[in-house]
Image 1 (spheres, rainbow, N blue to C red):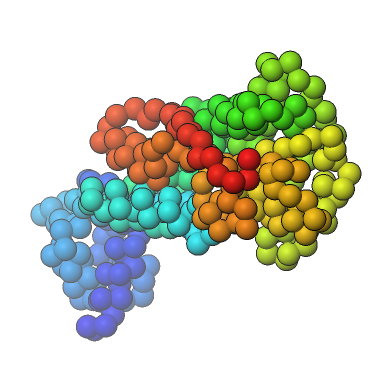
Image 2: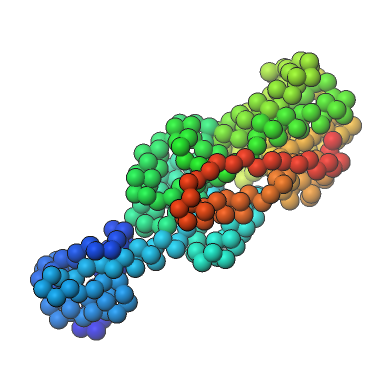
Length: 355
């Protein structure tokens, strides 16, 4: 019996958490539990007694067994952090900063990665609906496109699970607060930097399926327009998540080579979506015998390790505040009952040899 009642207690405890663990919920009677789990009345009683000792349920004489709400409290101390990647590019730093803030406030974290795939994102959101976490800090997948998972985000909100987007939000979920980059301002700042350095024809390469890409492009071409300089569509190239996979993981650089061979002229400088693509672009430029920045200047976003290990250190933008820290602090504020507030993080320019 000893193993059976502990096993039954585990099943009942899991059900309490999945169902929200709300206070005052009446459990099935001992007779109903006996029939449902095909166990003896004595085993059921021992299982309920164990849950009572843990403070999860209480017996009311003549009425039955009810939840205390402590199961909900345990679940509510866990924050799910959903990002595109876990151990690549800027994400380890963001995760570390967020987890540090959550831990200081007494919250544990459940970390998930979507690989920027909407199918994986859907699987994770369905799981989080079942696990009843206290809140979700999430970087949406392919945020420049309509989300097939908007229905799940709405279900999470209906379940009163606090949501906070990171980096960018879907247009159809604009009511969800977001901690994001000032992408327009960053694009404008980089283009203005190059213009001030004497460049009169600018090119760019941006990511198309994440909302940051179009926003950064918008800032870039706005600065070109405001300076009275020509905007050449052929000098701008777009890539998506699958193109990134080809370049970063499969080491296939046809996209970059075609861009440099067919679209670069007459531009003398390139604004890149991030340091990762800038790093690869500089390698291709050097392989072609081009000098950076004498022939082609390169600038980008994020001030990641790529900007420093590049054969030509990259002029890049960094946030004035740490994204992970700001997002975690906002989530804790929301969990405390405050209304969620969206906020854009400003950039500052770190000038290096590439420009």
